[in-house]
Image (cartoon, rainbow over all chains, first blue to last red; front, side, top):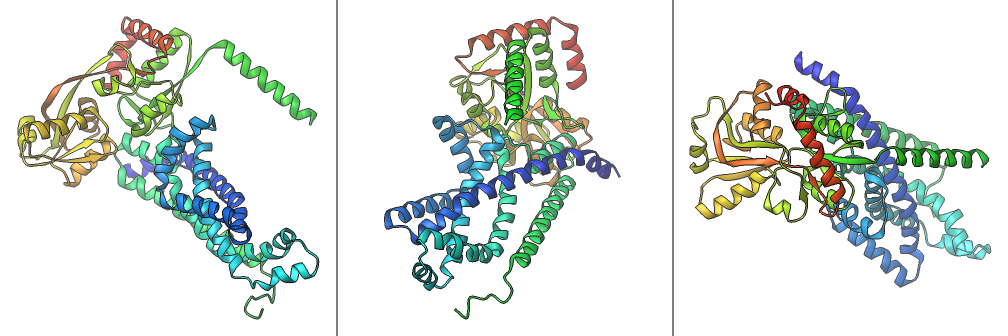
Amino acid sequence: MHILSTIIEALPYILEGTLVTLLLVAGALSVGFCLGVPMAVTQVYAPKPFSRLVSFYVWFFRGVPVLLLLFLFYYGLFGLMGIDVGTVGASCLVLGMTSAAYQSQIFRGAILSLPTGQLKAGRALGFTDLQSIRTIILPQALRLSIPGWSNEYSILLKDSAMCFALGTPEIMARTHFVASRTYEHLPLYITAGLIYFLITLAGVTMLRRLEQKVRIPGYNTAGM
Amino acid sequence: MKRLSCLLAALAVLCLAAGAQAKTYVNGIDANYPPFAYVSEDGKPAGFDVDSMNWIAKHMGFEVVHQPMDWDGIIPALLNKKIDMVCSGMSVSPERAAVVAFSDPYYTIQKVILVPANSPIATADAAIRGEIKLGVQRGTNEHELLETRKAQEKLKYDLRFYDSAPLAVEDLLNGRIDAIALDSAPAKDAISKGKAVKIVGTFAEDDVFGVALRKDDKELIGIINEGYKKLMADPYWKELQDKYLK
């Protein structure tokens, strides 16, 4: 009974952290999307030096732990560059830049799965390459990316727990604070786990719905 | 557009007004360190250090915001001006004093050994010289000290590191470690919360707590030292100790 009352008492405080976590995930996914799509296009279609540059970016961000990147950017690079966006902003940016590396590969895979003839067909119709990519390739590729992208959502959600390293008051940090005061570590961690589970479930379900909703009836790539 | 510029102007005026009123300093705290700093039931920073600094802020004419941080990153945050001070049970040590400035000491704390209530370990010396698993919070003075002593005196304990004292207490009760080396305040906090643990003695000389500040921030160093002088002369100082440290 005592444990239950501790959890109930702590719940509003931890749920406030849920908003921070959701903000982190939404921000990071957006940053990752905005960087990831051009990166994927560059990697597939741009001349060698540019695609090499993107490959290097992807190699770097996939090769270094998120926790290290958080420290590196927040205490080091952002300071040198004179960027001060607060802890939540910095967490969003770092998670977003990491996510961009992964997202770009999701989009690249989707673009590569499309028949190469589409770009040529576009040219034959008088489209510039950029026009073809924007109006023919990407609308298909992005639809194909949704399943892989929902993976990225759940991974980012869990990575966001590391942002406490910068003092970002998200779910995990708050759970830890309450546990330190009450010494009810296990029940509180289980509570936090349930919250993460529910957010994952809700997000993945929503993305599944989106996938159904934007599907083009009768469309498949196999016949092309 | 017009509305937006109005809003911006209002905001700018507000900022200026706030700036003129009082300076706001950010105090980085380790909110996993009761009773010196923690997060209370209503989600606000609380504790001996938080209340002390609030009193000092009020009487020295500045605003203070308490920012819970990860202990591992708290000194980099201070040096990078993400925060302005660390008033959160920080022991003064030569290693730390090399990079940050400390205020005058405001509290003396013992370094104790905590064991389960039914443990066969009877003294701190027995713990330190025994072949035991000894828990310690990572990045603390105790951590430094125990590593140095282990190497110098060829002691046999096996150090296990934790993010916070309460987590170490939890693992002590789980039976994964035999004893914890920590400050007396969090040890007493665990006991007062009904945990089946006991203190068997001190294992090192006492430490003093000071407020960590940037070395070039001479103005704030002066304000904080002056503030503590006032606070210690006030009956509120005794009240705070009774409230948190009994």
